[in-house]
Image (cartoon, rainbow, N blue to C red; front, side, top):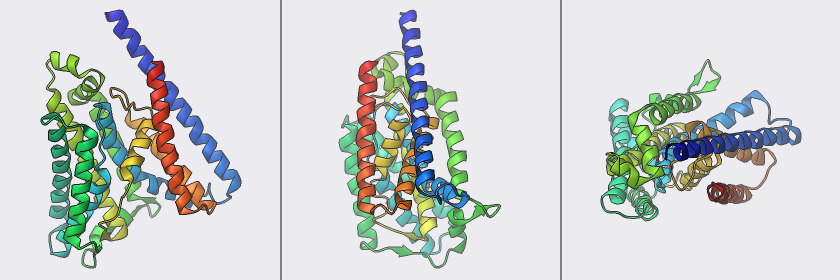
Length: 323
């Protein structure tokens, strides 16, 4: 039994390494291609733009990684971002202190994730159905509360600085958030008991339960963490556009899934990493930025994003089948 377990562990490590190497090569080839076809691509300002645009995808992918490793999926991320943005904009507009409005919105995001986890763990609903329902609920609430109109912020100049300020007048703050949150999520996933339990539940839920792990609490935690990351992304996006937009972040959950899977996560659970999610997010970011520089229509960019999602999930299916 021990030899089999060691063999499986080595196989997973080799698969993870090969996936990251393949993704890294793909990213380098994309950078090389766009650098050749567009002289503006490799300039510092454009590279910082790529990092800024990638930051939201990466942050949401951090949460998605926890859910995917636990053998689930969260389709409510985009709506969570929009609803969180609407709530913080409404609170600031009504005179709430910035710190209180932000904390309350993080609680809202975590609560949405907790409800997802309870629906899936306690009520045994499929993750796809539960989070799809939550997606519709949160998006509907955002539209109802605002009457489908943006909530503009004209009385919170300090809130704008959360996402629009730059370190040394060069590096956008969201890029720093992406890095700091990445280190925190990686530590939580790899160096803590709850992180190891997430892997255990995703690998074999029944074995994890027999080992004394409270699998229901672990799943709920994974979705709560996803909700937290979505809420943080919502605050950053709201600060960037200086308004709460009820229709913002449509399809962001697909980008988070694609980034996770491209980076080596398995949709069957038990496998994934934060570093892989960052790598996958940058592949998507470079692709979208390069297509934009080539003046490719926004409609074709959406097509390309959808194709990448399908291709990434297909590669995951092939990879897990071989394993």
